[in-house]
Length: 284
Image (cartoon, rainbow, N blue to C red):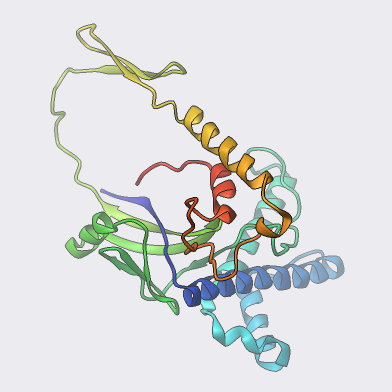
């Protein structure tokens, strides 16, 4: 049986690679805004907008004719292509929501993205994408070190039981992450390991899980109390940040958010506070 599964890894890029990641995110943001402006112009005149394929054709013609768009060759073409596809998906969702054929809350017309106000993100739909050890390889970016091992996904790729589809790079709390959408082949057993056994699970507040098996025995798993520990760290980071002088609140010279300069007090203060607000993610 083949299912889609996501693998997410934190990146440790070099300063040059970090600039390339930011450049790709800026190209995707520019392509979204450029395509949205074209769609608005056509919507006001004709009552319809361009599809992702139409926007890609217009972009190919415009980027070669306009000298101001000469930077397009510095980034992968997938950054702009996937941005047009995201815009097309947002426009179709808006149309379906307005007609009442889309379930859920009503969504509005797509809006422009502004640097610093939106999430830095871009996606690769094709190209060389692989992982080995503590590195991942992405199109145009090359081999980038990861903060954690990628052995589990690499083993599946070597065995031929997994295939990488798209890869999405995002920046959260001044750290870059890459998420692979992988088509995984899983073996489903023909029969249950314990025929007739059953268990009921109740996620709770005081306890993480409470289960009862088929013989009436209760199984309780205590919670990790992650919120209490995270709030304690966030209070300390916020207090240290508020007591800094105005000039010391910014990243120090030579300090990169991805590779902070070591300091006697521990981690660079330009990272502790935003990381405290970051939502903890589940391990892969």
